[in-house]
Figure 1 (cartoon, one colour):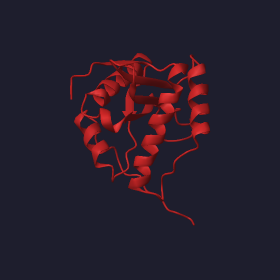
Figure 2: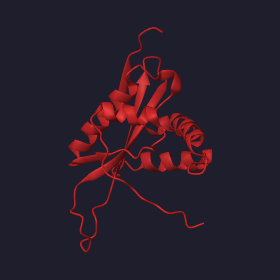
Figure 3: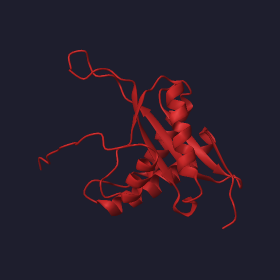
Figure 4: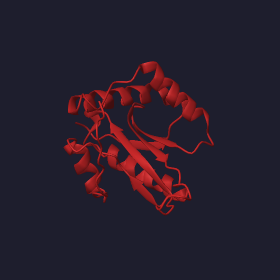
Length: 164
C-alpha cells in the first residue's frame, strides 16, 4: 500500500454522509461482537443526529474527521462532554468526556486512529476537559489494545442486571 497522508480536521455538514457510513460500519462490527447489546441504527436517524450536531457550531460536542489525501473521510472521533454530578451526589465534579473513535477497516494501520485520538485530546483540553474515557466492550480486543497503547487504562468496573 502506498503511503497515505492524513489530515485531521473538524467535521462539517458536508461530512454527514461519511459520518453516517462510519457509524453504520462501526455498528455492524459491534453487532458481530454482541448482538444482544448492539444494533444497527436507522441511516436517517444517524444522518439527523450528525446534521443537528454539526449545525450547532457552539454545541458542547466535538466531531473530528481523518481525511486521506484523496479527499476520502476514513475515520472520525466524537468527544462527548459529560455533565457534572448533581450537588447532592458524592462524586466530585471533574470536567470529563467520552471519546468514540472509528476508522474504516481498509484504512487501519495508517495512523488515522492515533491522529484522531491526539486531536480529540487537544480539543478536549482546550475546553477545560481533564478526563477522557472510552467505553469499550470487553470483547473488542482491538479497541482495548488501541486505547491502552494511548495511555487509557481500566478505570473501574461497571455492573448491571438485565431485568427482563
